[in-house]
Amino acid sequence: MVIRTLDPERDLDGYLRVVHQQDPYPRDAVDWWERRREARLGAFRRDLVGEVGGEIVAVGVLLDVETGDAINARLVVDVAYRRRGHGRAMAAVLDELIAERGPRHVDARVSDGDPVSRAWAERRGYRLHSRAIRSRLELSEFDSSVHRAAVARVEAAGFRFEAAGDLDHLYQLFARLAVDTPDQDSAPDRDSFRRRVADRSGAIALVALQGSEWVAVAIVVPQASDGAWNEFTGVLPGLRGAGVATALKVLVTEEAARRGWAWIETINHAENAPMLAVNRALGYRPMATTLFLRRELEEAGRRG
Image (cartoon, rainbow, N blue to C red; front, top):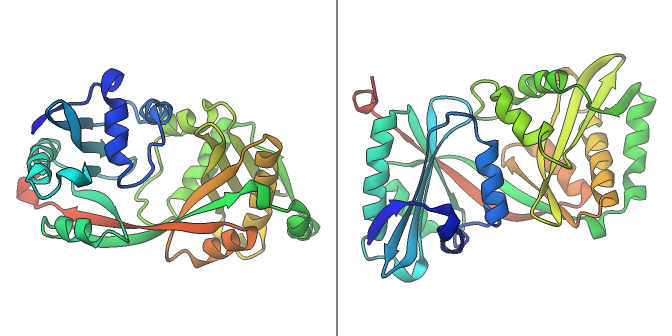
């Protein structure tokens, strides 16, 4: 196998064919380019492919985590070419690049239904860190009238809703809420947030207000040609449990349906029972459980 840097102009079809044997992200070439555009400026990123006879049979990706001293790693080998040493060869190249970067830890993910890949990663020092559930709402099945009472109850309690037109204010609220989520060490990068939300045509950002204060937010962004991704939903800690998140999600779902989108997908930590319950009530159906694995790096092996 020959390992080289990805040439997106000619390799993306083969790259995506292999990647999609693990999960459907990125969905297509457009999505791949969009993710690259959204990445933090100056972020460490390496995209590698492994070829046999001119065919891409393995993919290796390293990318700085948005927050914290860590790297996300991805390694996928075409199922028809496994057990031939291609995974070991790609992992060796990735490990050299990781050593040069010198992060505190490396994160990877595998499907809960893929015990072989999990065992392969665990032999290389990865350990289970968390579980997340990916869910999907088919908008053709969403009956807004069933959920309108949830919005009315929150409005009767004194909350109101409006589109978030102030990017700085929106980022401040998002950053404040994001650090309260699992695995978030610090606020996400402002420029990356701007590229993911403000600069993304068709993004929906709705906030809940109590008086004049922004207290909750829901952000949904277009995904592929016919759907959307729930980028973030959050409520200030003292106001959780009052139905504000449900009302926000009803409102952004109504807007997504008005725009003609067919579906919304989201991912939640398996321990986030309240948000999982909100999603179930709205009609989201679980699609897959993802295992997030982590490998801690020895201090002596880190840069500096």
